Structures are given as C-alpha cells and as structure tokens.
Amino acid sequence: MKKVDVVLGLQWGDEGKGKVVDVLTPEYKVIARFQGGPNAGHSIHFAGKSFVLHTIPSGIFRKGSVNVIGNGVVIDPVILADEIAKIEAMGVNVADKLLISKKAHLILPTHRIIDAASEAAKGKTKIGSTLKGIGPTYMDKTGRNGLRVGDIVSPQFMERYERLKNKHIALLKQYDYKYDIAEYEKEWFAGIDVMRRFEFIESEYVVNRFVDDGDAILAEGAQGSMLDIDFGTYPFVTSSNTMCAGVCTGLGVAPSRIGDVFGIFKAYCTRVGSGPFPTELFDATGETLRQVGHEFGATTGRPRRCGWLDMVALKYAVMMNGVTGLIMMKADVMNDFDTIKVATAYELDGKQIDYFPYEAGDDLKPVYREFKGWKCDICKVRNYDDFPQEFRDYVEYIEKETGVPVKIISVGPDRDETVVR
Ligand code: GDP
Ligand code: IMO
Ligand code: MG
View (cartoon, protein in one colour):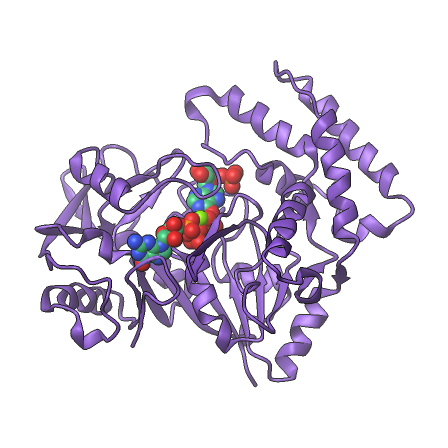
C-alpha cells in the first residue's frame, strides 16, 4: 500500500514549502493541503515565471496532478477566486484538477473584520496576524458555528450566512472598531459563484480511495511547526495544527497511513509577526539575510525577522513530526559569510538547557557553535559531492544532531536549483 507522504515546515513558516512541493509533484498523483488558509503564501518559480499560492496546493502547475483542498483548510472565496483567475490566465484548466472538501470551513468577510478588530485591541501584545480571518474562522469551527463549503449548495445557505454574520456584528460591538464590509461582501458572493464551478467532495473518502488504489499522495503543510496551535510559541501562533498530526485530522487519513515525513528548514531562521525568536539578529548580519534572502512576506509583504539556525527548536520539531527526511533551503543566501552560527542550546538563569522552554522570553540566551563559511557560489551545484567541504560539514552536522538524513538541498528559488541526494 502506498502511504500519504507529507511536506511540512519545521520553523516559523516560509521555509520554501511551495518550491519543494512543486519539485516533488512529478512523483505524486495527488497534492493535498490539510490545514491553514490564505495566511499561507507559497512561492513557486519556473521557466522565468513566479507565482504565489495561498489556498490552492502547489502541485497545480504540473500536468496531470490532482489537487485537493482538505477539510482542515479554511477558505476565503475572494482569495480563492482571485487565485483561480490568475492560474487560468496562465493557461491551466483549474476546474479539471482542483477538488474542494465539503467540510472545509468558509472565512466570512466578518471573520476578517473580527481578526483586525481583535488585533487592534491587543495593541502591543498583538499576534501579528496576517489579518485573513484565520483565528476567528477556526474559533467558529471549534465553537460549532462555522459555515462550510458543503453549505454553499444548501437552500438555507443565505439564511445560515446571515445568521453567522449577525452574530459577528453583535460581537464587533464590543470593539471600538469602524468597518464597512459592503464591498468585500459583494466580492465574497462573486467568489462563492466561482466556487460553484468546482467539484465539492467528501475528501476523506476520495483521499482514502486514492490510497487504496496505490496512488501516490503528498500532503502539503502551511505555516510551520513553531506556529502550531498546541506546540508553537503560544499565543504567538496560528490557529491550526501545522504538524504531522494535522494531516490525520485535516484529510481524514489514519496515522498508520502516513508514510514519509519531509521536514523543510532554512539553513538559517526567519519569523514574521510577533513572538519569541531566540536566535533573532538585530545587527548587520540579520539585515544581510533579509536583503540577500529577499525575506519579505509572500502574503503581507512585511519584512521577516531573521536569525541563525536554531537546533533546539529544529530538534523539537523533528521529534514531534516524526521527520524521516530533511530538506534544507536557502543556504545560498549565506554564500559570502565568513562564519555561520548555530544555536546548540540555550542559557536560562545561568543554566544551560537543551529543550524549548514553556516561556521563551528575552532572558533566554542562545549558546552558539561556529562553522566556517564556504565563501563561494553554490547555486550551480547539482551533485552533493560537488559542494565545498565547509558546506558538507554544515549539512552533516545537522544530520548527526537530528539523526535524520538531509535528502534534498535547495540552492535557489527555481525548480531546477535543487540537489537531490
Ligand atoms: P513557503 O511559504 O514555505 O512556501 O515559503 P515562501 O514562498 O513564503 O518563502 C520562501 C522564499 O524563498 C520564496 O521567495 C522562494 O522563492 C524562495 N526560495 C525557496 N528556496 C530557495 C533557495 O533555496 N534559495 C533562495 N535564495 N531562495 C529560495
Ligand atoms: P506559510 O504557509 C509565516 C504567522 C503570522 C502571525 C501568526 C498568526 O507561507 O509558511 P494568522 O494569520 O495565522 O492568524 O497569523 O502566524 N503566519 C505565518 N508566518 N508563514 C506563514 O505561512 C504564516 N501564516 C501565518 O505572521 O505571526
Ligand atoms: Mg510563505
């Protein structure tokens, strides 16, 4: 039996999941998103073109692929319709290769307003949400008030929409927040009409049938393990389980049907939004990572916070995801660095610790190990053995520390800039 393989981020998101899924898609028939929503921005570069996907799986550009938006995903019809139009403009017949779960929840215009009002009310303690309505939509899902894709075809759809919207309007009275949803609501219903052109499926049956038939399936994560609602740096997290367990609930796949788990990480570290980031750099090196790595949000355009690789956090994520293969991204960004640092432990209250603590505050100091930089351009390398020794030392240190092989190394944003071992 073929099992469901998984690609997910091991850090704070933006590890390069879009690129990797696009690279791996030829080996899979089905690509399925299992959680998150348009807070995600997954970039793909090929044949001189670039694209950022928010809701649609990153397999969409490959011939013959089936792309599933699973039940664990939350969908904003405006953003989905916009994505569909842009992909169709590139000559792809999206309706032929995109299936949407009936059980996926809808992000209402008022969910976005509540997200914005709640963030504004938090002031300095704000999460730094992408303001796409993610938190409020998952709240309505667990609160059992949500509206789902399957409801779109119900005769009671409008009635259910109005009921939830009115609930939100009542809730918004507690905030001193001015809003106008008329324009967005119009676009929202236009988006709903676009969605009607697609097949709404019982995705748990469809996905398990693919597994039974021996078809290769790749589950595509959004965000990263350190943004997981349970194990991330709470409350500075997103509102879904970004980890491997999310595949089971977000697609209806049993744990025994999970196959390889590919964990993606950058050779350094970034984070966008608020919250703990022990290895963050506030100096010129941090600025160099941001400029050379083009570290600006694919969804919001915000500058990403940059810092050194954090082995403590990485090992934490590897442990909880059961990672079977690592994928290292963006080492090329450090081509000119004399020295590269990696946090191997932290110092807290004068003691050294090797675990990610409950509160990772400013008093947590990383303990660094230094590596000699490779000081050359690795972007053209396509065979592992052609990498400079200093680079291989870095990779092999990570393998030894995590106990997991680094199976793919990405040396540039393009599809072709990839080294498979
Ligand atoms: P995702 O959310 O995990 O899909 O990642 P994003 O697309 O938000 O951010 C990753 C960024 O790094 C994108 O701009 C990619 O084009 C770019 N990228 C991916 N892999 C590499 C790489 O190996 N080297 C460089 N320099 N850029 C890369
Ligand atoms: P991809 O899939 C990076 C961050 C936000 C914020 C927190 C909560 O592209 O890796 P939310 O909108 O979910 O309420 O925001 O999570 N965040 C991401 N950071 N990459 C993402 O997605 C993210 N999705 C959410 O910046 O700190
Ligand atoms: Mg991203």
